[in-house]
Image (cartoon, helix red, strand yellow):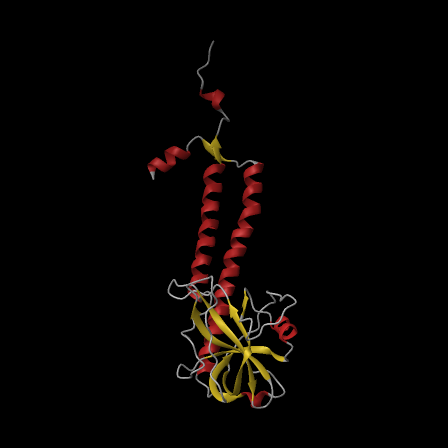
Length: 254
């Protein structure tokens, strides 16, 4: 305490305008980023709670949603056939440090509707050759869940994906582009398989949400810590030597 008092003696708090400007510009940004991460953490907790609640409900057939879309993560029962002519490989999907793809395939339900089904992950060790994807024949009954919609990404060129040319490799998923490219009326929503026992299922073990609520909270703490450090730096740098009254300290020269 005495050391702090002695270090502040003869100094006054008078930050200059550059320090004020720097702090006033940067501090709201840091606080805003921290608040945004807390908001994202709240959203992720609500999303995870919704997913967990839906997973406890019984799976419903796709025919039950003739007029409306299922809720995100709704468990579903698919009955129909996979189309071997329309297979896409969603690239840059790693599992346990191994490179691979997620296999997307057109599926025609017994009601006649077309769905895009994510069959799971497949290793792709040799980039010079496309991985081999087999399609189980006949009518299938599959367990799946409805996926949230994603923004447009990959756009196809003027070519057709077919069994002779092999699957197309995608960087991102764009259902509108796939409808245009394939010429089939895919639904505006897609599903991914959840039942391990099916012959159509590849490696499932789907990863958790891209970023958990706890990770967002950790980022928020980092931003708020930087804001606290900025305030501390502002206070420390704002103290300057106090030269007022120094003339009184000098001895009179008569």
